Length: 217
Image 1 (cartoon, rainbow, N blue to C red):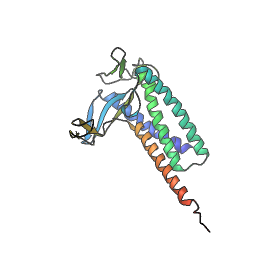
Image 2 (cartoon, helix red, strand yellow):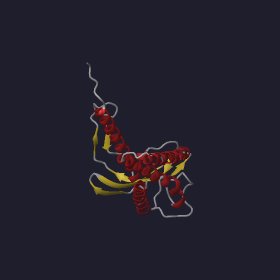
Image 3 (cartoon, one colour):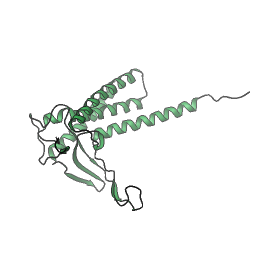
Image 4 (cartoon, one colour):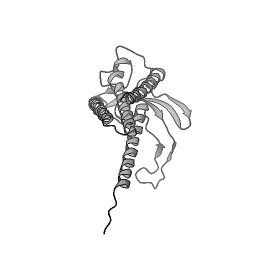
């Protein structure tokens, strides 16, 4: 179990170091070019992974509670899988998913308490309001427990262009791929899920290969 907890701790440490550096060194929505297809683009996400959001502050609180439940379930899953001597690939996958879930939960639970600025929700217009200054650590905070925002910064606009006029629905509109901005915790979850899918397919294929072939007399 220790080695998988180390994976979780390692991902968490890297994730939080990057997030704190970005939040305390960059202005909101600031964009730094690393290459022509990779940018550090600082935004905050009040909702789910990859910039998805829902339901204002109330929706955010519900999502945070759901995250806590999911983390507990994944931790139990990892513990039981270790005790059952599950394959290493499966255990690595679960550990990565757990690390990513905890990483984003830390932002939601505590960033509103320890930083002086962050996205805030305006009930009158039903929108999240951005801010201009670089954030600093503060005992006052900008929101309560479980209502902080997740820091995102990884942007990969691999290519962009315009849909041809004959294209259904989006004809003539500008598009960018890959548009969502995400963080290391999101990446950890995505990699863990992808590894689980590959593991499941491999396991299914091996089971089918090992199945006895019936023969007729």
